[in-house]
Amino acid sequence: MDNEQLQLLISNALTEDIGTGDHSTLSCIPPHKLGKAELKIKQEGILAGVEVARRIFEQVEPTAVFTPFKKDGDVMAIGEKAFEVTASIYTILTCERLVLNCMQRMSGIATLTHQYTEKLKGYKTKLLDTRKTTPNFRLLEKEAVRIGGGTNHRFGLYDMIMLKDNHIDYAGGLELAINKAYDYTQIHNLPLKIEVETRSLLDVETVCQIGKGKLFRIMLDNFSPAKITQALAIIQGEYETEASGGINLQTIESYAATNVDYVSVGGLIHQAQSLDLSLKAVIV
Image (cartoon, rainbow, N blue to C red; front, side, top):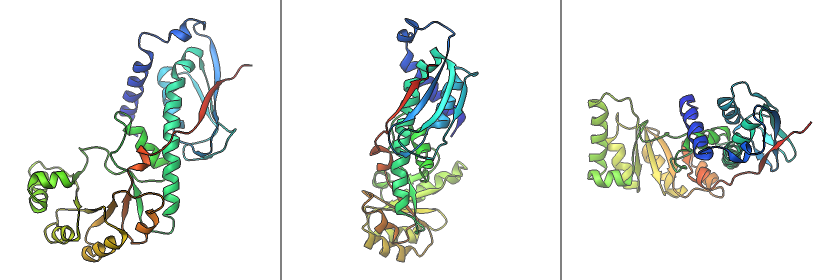
């Protein structure tokens, strides 16, 4: 993860939550009093967000003592402890909800991603996420996919050129879109890879004829596994290939069986359910 982006995310999230002050804590807890709390696991799955939790506590209180008992990517069972933190009670209570929101959401995504990657065992196909993310939370959602065993696609609009259906239609067709995008990278000296979406086998044939030296990947959007096989026979390994569009846990293995290079699943993030975790005070 980008450290500056994470620091900014934490700062913005705390500002949103604290506002004029954590008056619940200020009203009944003496200042500077130390406390201890532990993260309890209440649902099975893949743990994600431990390092994010550490960064949250340490950003608020650099002297906080954070002791992990499990790490990101570990299988978690009900009743286990993920970590323990000793810090000012003000810090613990102020950070509590942000830590839980991040870890519950990340663990849900990592768990669902792991379920998908288990289906891909034995195949060469890799699992990609998409940009179907929560605004201002993409950094952690994509990190959760990585923790769960998936591969991150482009992070945003700036780090790769992806010519989707609307780009192609607005540009006037496949050939114009591809040539304009390639020329753009050359004129501006941008080391950006170009991927193009195809919607039919005819599109695939066209791309293969005009894309040499310009493209690195062809997206096969809403193709059935049978049509993926036909498309791969046309492509002949000249480009990376990505299957996309409505692929789920029940169908992903049939796509992997075609030997397509990647399968992208937006549902890794937008269909994931948060897992149940709690941060509890330790009173000694």
